[in-house]
Length: 274
Image 1 (cartoon, rainbow, N blue to C red):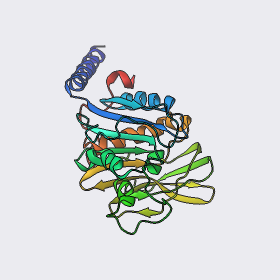
Image 2 (image 1 turned 135 degrees about the vertical axis):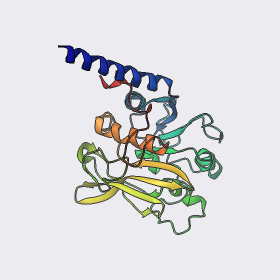
Image 3 (image 1 turned 90 degrees about the vertical axis):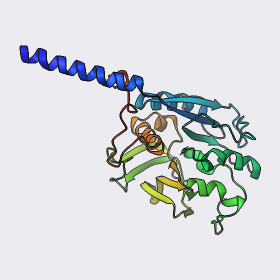
């Protein structure tokens, strides 16, 4: 009986220490951008915020527009300082019709200055200048600038069918604890060009086709995490998807060691794990 009391006391002390470290650690500030064509962003913005905040010491602020065209009127356009005060920007907008060179340069400005980026699903098909199906041959052109930031050029997707996700680099800090899985209905984005700065983490298989679906990129020294998965609410709300996105964000912000351990104070709170 005394031993049980002693063990309980040790456990409570450890719990108090964990809570103390978490409370004293300044949370990461993430800016989530949502809106545009073809997706239920009004629901997904809240699914992402809740899911990410439950998995890490992260505050997710939102900039959202209900504009459902390929030219969403996000207020960041024309404001290259839009990410001031944030540790990371999550691009989940679908803005294929935004093609003004100066606007795109402004969207990229924080990342060129060193702010990490997380890019989800239709962010890969945004900010297109010219024909996205034409493979990039010259990186130093307006046509290439958004794809260079992503590290991969994609122009389209297949049918809405399940995608088999296979982690091809299981030793990367992001993927170490993650297991292969199969989505419900989803879209498999094609790969036109993979930049030398990109590093593939997983591939997706669908209907006899295969493509990289998760990768990291070194954008002139800035860490960038990407996944093309995330069309339907069911996928976005899947714990396996939210685990992947949150781990990618923490890695991009330098809050994860080479063994995949999250820096003390930046994992989920004690309350979130109950």
